[in-house]
Length: 219
Image (cartoon, rainbow, N blue to C red; front, top):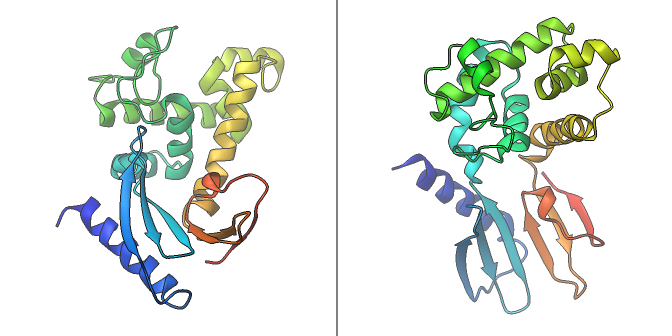
C-alpha cells in the first residue's frame, strides 16, 4: 500500500473512532482536493458535518527534509517552515530576483554550495539547509538573526546589528517563526469548533478554523 493511501486510511479510521460517540446515523462520506493540493475528508450527517484535513502537499517532502535537516543539526520543522514561506512547496518556484526552487536559492549561492541540480527537490533542500546552517553558525544560533541573514544576507544583518529594517525581511522572519510554531504544536492537534448554527466540526488544521467561532483543542 502506498504511503499516501496508508495515511489516508489511518486518518479515516481515527476520525470514525473519534466521532463514534457523537453521532450514530451518517448520511455519507466524501472527500475533495482543492487547487493547492489540500485534501479534505467530509463526514456528513443529517444535522452535522465533520471535516478532517488529510496529507497537505508539503508532507511529500518530509523524508528529504528530515534526513537533510538532521544531517546538518537543524530542526526539520524549522526547515519545513522556511520552505513554506519561501515557495509554498512549489518545486518550480522562481522569484523576480531569480531565486530558484523550494528554498529559493540564488544561482550564485547554489553554485557556492555545490548544488548539483537546483530544480531537484532533494538537492535544493540540501543547499538551503547548508546555507541556513551557516547562518546559524555565523549568528550564534540566534533564530531571528539566522532567518534574517537567510533572507537578506549576513552582511545586512551585521550592518544593522539585528534584523534589517526591510519590510520583506521582517515579514519573512515573522512568518517563518509562526509556521515553525504551528508545525511544532498545531500540526498534530485535533480541534473542534461550532458554527453559527450550532453544528460541530472536527479539524486538524488550526488555520482552517473560521474567524469568530468558538473552538477548543481536544487532542
